[in-house]
Image (cartoon, rainbow, N blue to C red; front, top):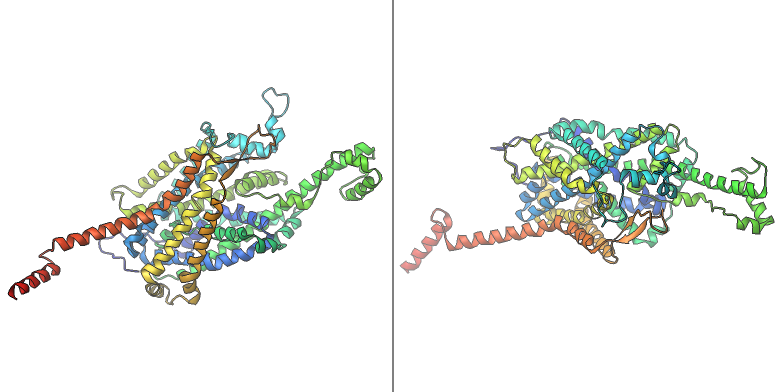
Length: 620
């Protein structure tokens, strides 16, 4: 892909060892989505049957893109902007687009880490602060909002976010979140202060610790009552959603795509610190397989604990009914138990149907409680914290859980920040006399100031906007142009020779077929399908409004027009650099050619040829 000249060029940093590089790539790929997004998709799309479209997307979309990025970064030893400008100046906008997306993602992603820190600090309290409702202002009872919902919901929506009723009501900055956000950015800066030298040391902890916590959770979860029900629910395949719902295939493709963190530019930057002679094919397969295996491994722990939570809710539901039946029919205590509840219910319902029908009995079904799905912050800060609260030694499990989320978040943040810093060096917009420590500090400070919008009362709504739209259409477009740029602009033959130079073997037919046909078609199909589905409806968002008549259910509202305009900008602005840079390069090239024709230089061969031809014409 061209040689990187060494003369006059500052020596590029290198990883201390191969393990450090692999841990960094794995840490970047394995993020919060593996914990709170993949299990949710399994839950709503037929359990284990979701693995079918997921694995197809991994094999034909995820791995080829991952291999391509690691290969070009390693060969050219540059960041995203430098790589694409080297392939073709027309593709310089692809690198700029990756840098913008990485920056936008990092400012909201670190807000989630700030929330994790807030919960982590409160996990040391006994009892856990989200385990009970606070008293009202008069100290005569519990807070009304908390009583209507739950203590877990109240702690998240009111005591953590202090959320407003809708996105149009901004509210004020929440000082406790500002402090947590500043702390999160300080942690990122400290880990990144020496570039890959300090970050490479940090990943030994941040990339491995989540696996230790997941294993501890798994061992503990499997001993909880109801864990088996959760695992049976996970692994019992239901193929009907796959056959009937095209949304399943779309979600599987986007999940594997975003889970591997391709198109952010971070993987290109990480691989650029490798030596050129490195088997990047093996690295790509290893990182991709470990990433997907982690999603499945995390799902086992998550569903074991969700099964425990569902069983507790199921038992609590039946206990309430037992109390109502026992009081109404004046049965002796301990006569009706959980074990014989249905026998008693059937007997009383057949003997006194009218009286049983008049009682406010709840419908108790274990499957219904297992079907209650949640993803993202809803899973981490509501469902899982409620489940942890019911576990013996809840403080210890809460501390471990939020340290795990912190480690996962930091590992992903390293890739996002690297996806910003390395291209900035490529652009040479930063004077060389400014140390890397100062540049990193400036980026972190600017990111902190911009992310203050997420600490407002409406901050959670804005996090959902950024999470839903910055990391969707722009990344699909960037990845599409990456494949087109390498395979059809630079050329499959040249790329194969580069891979042969690096690994000692040329790519096989599988890789070539994916790069040339399958992956571009899949990306284009996912992009068109995603845009088509979004265009069919006006975007909506759930709000937390205590005045809503169906509270504590969330009230679904349409985004205001001005927010919808911002959503469009978040989808368009990051990738507008792709056509703008290409157009700029074409115009510059045309101007240069016109100037060359109009003013031939006597100091180049072209000028000499013109003079000779004119002299020959005069002679004849």
